[in-house]
Image (cartoon, rainbow, N blue to C red; front, side, top):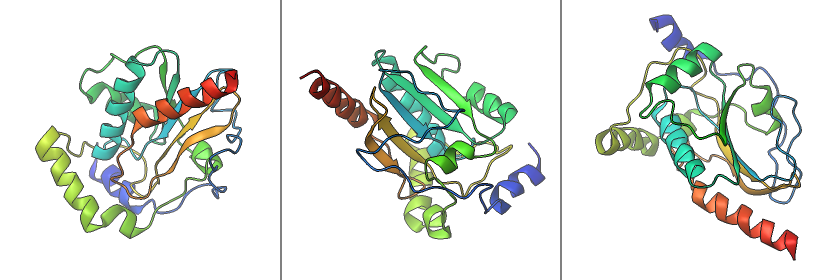
Length: 201
């Protein structure tokens, strides 16, 4: 990691593609060839902030934990850092290589999938609010999750998480309101399981 790479993550304030409107609950999930969902199988998808971000790390670790105990669902993490940077970051995480078979990571360096799901760039307040800065310190102090080197990606890229049922309908989630927003993946699982039960009635 070089100083230029770290600086570049702060300077990249524009998205390469104009984002569409984010999907709403009850709407069809956006269709993109880089993000193929399994037919008749529900999935939880999370779009990460840049690799190196402590909030992205916490999100991924939580996703991995929930995926381990819900093998009947698919779990997908989307990274906009490069393939090499994403791989380096994954190897640096606690219990690296322990991802279950139902969890996969997709690299979307050009942020095409992000745009299709309505995830553009955020504001200064979204990233640098006093609350977010406090959350960074608190996450590091309480859980030992601090900033890691940022080899590629934009610190301004918005994150988001969605739950999609087996029919391709968005049942849960949305765009993150703040950089430090915590995602309750267990809630997403409960919503998808409930929608699956309703479909059987």
